[in-house]
Image (tube, rainbow, N blue to C red):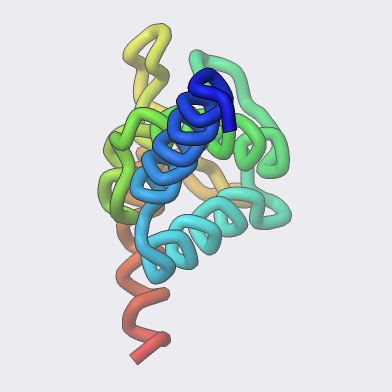
Length: 124
């Protein structure tokens, strides 16, 4: 094998190894996946920068933020997902809000932390 090819294979292996280490543990991944699905609950809306969005749009937006943060090793738990991806706009700094049905808007961090506690209690 040539020196360049060997170096290329080693670089690829190091990159893949680093990517594997960046992902949260399986339990955290399951919790985050649940929270992403929960944001998309039918009848709920998500407020981002003053505009209301359907749950499916919110899930897609938060998933993009999650993927970005995982690559930078900033999300390792469901709590860090909520803190870094699902609490506020990284552009404006405004809090995200969730509103279901005719209920009052609630800060997304509160909404998701409560759901995380229920999810964990049900998993026991």
